[in-house]
Length: 141
Image (cartoon, rainbow, N blue to C red; front, top):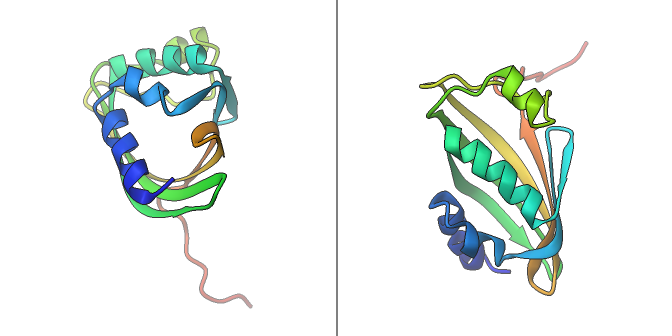
C-alpha cells in the first residue's frame, strides 16, 4: 500500500463512505483500541454507526511508512461532539472504558496506527493514543 492509496482510503473514512471504507478490510478483520478488540466488519461498522452519529471524526495523516504486509502511521484524530455520549451509553454498548463526549466538545489526539495487511486489505488495525500534555523529561538526576 502506498501513501497515496492510504490517503484515498482516509478520504473515504473522513467522508463516512462506509461501503467503500470496508472494501479495504478483510471479512475477518479486527480493530484494536482503548483496550477493546472489535472483530469483523459488522461489529466495527456497528460501532462507527453509533460513534459517528454522535461525533464528527476527522483523521489527518502526518507520517506514513509501509511494507509488503504492514502499514504504520502517525495521525491527528479530531473528535467533535455532535450529540452527547454519556458513560451510561458507552456501558450499554459494552465499552465502559471509552470516554464520554459532550455535545459541542472537542478533542484532538495524536494516534499511532499499525495495520497488518492480507492481500492488500486491512486484516488488523491497532491504535495507540499518545497522551496530550505529555510531560517532557530532558534530563535525569
